[in-house]
Picture 1: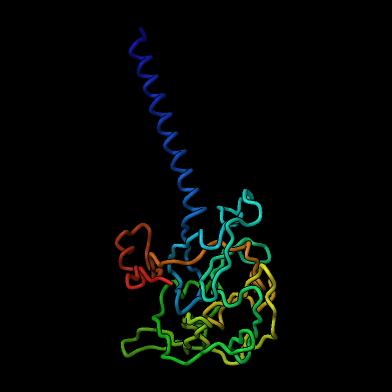
Picture 2 (picture 1 turned 180 degrees about the vertical axis):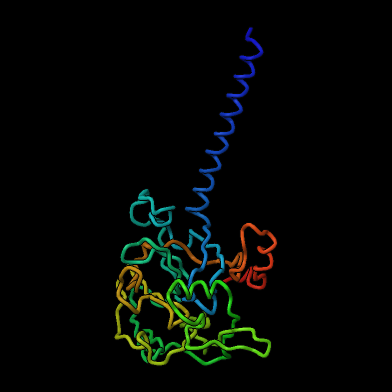
Length: 282
């Protein structure tokens, strides 16, 4: 018979093995969940305003467009090509690895799919020879938040409204006001876009035929989005995006913060939250 010490050592080893076994199972579960079902994504810029604000946190569904190596964490080269592939619909908001280096995750709206001809004329999208319906609606007005200020400073800008000046109300609260439009794609999908600068650098683009396996994507904030209107280059435009680069489809806003929280001060997690944005779908 073993001694009491031997039994205790055996029991301790068994508990340790069970613990590491649990951690391994948990890691496998998280890997499968993150790779094939859902993944988190946060918004670091204003390129998708008005639908998405800096500080929004989303759930991205991984299955709608199929899977490639970019579906996996760190783009692990475990999936050859693309499996269970499906082309996005026009109007989808998609997360993808941005060309040309496929290092950063971007989020944009799908405007053109393979076979489409896209032209930009005076800021209006011309899809297959027909102007996409676009009408002016009420201005988009949002308060200036700390994360807007931080993003502006990081980019070397002056005003968080990316205009010469922001506005103030009678109480001194600062806010941004942008001209807003409602676009409606063929098929009926509608969404709001911002267009502050008329005849800006991206407001006129020659027609381009989208080849098989490529997508034309644009940000809803037309003057603050490096997208398919520009050639693919690091930290710049993205050109026509390969469908293989797709990561997933934006599904739901699960949290939003104005940037004033401090991880060391738990109560600020609640005061900084924008609860009215939680639960918004696409």
